[in-house]
Length: 94
Image (cartoon, rainbow, N blue to C red; front, side):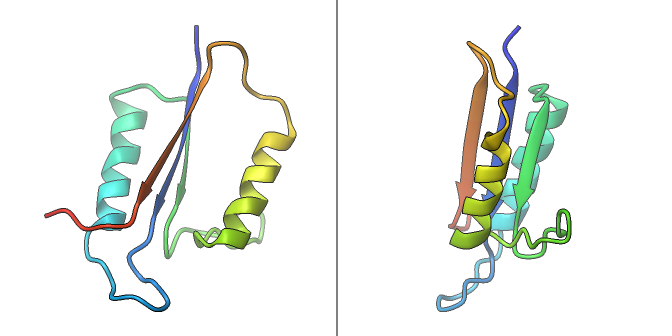
C-alpha cells in the first residue's frame, strides 16, 4: 500500500511584508486533516514559531528548508507508488 507523507509550511510574520493572520491556522488545520482524516504517515510542519528539531531552527526560510529537505531525502524512505505532498500557505483566508 502506498505511503503518503507531507510537508506543510506557513508564514504569518514576513521580514519585509505586512503580517498575515490566518496562514498558520490554515496550515495547522491541513496538518490535522492529513493526519486524522486522510491517514498520512508523516506530516512535517514548519511555521514562524515551530519548535527546533535536533537543535536546529525550523523557521521556514530558504536556508532551513533546504537543510531539512536535504536531510529528509538523504535516506531512501519512499517506494514505488508512495507520495510526498507539499503545502505552502502565504496568503490569508477568512
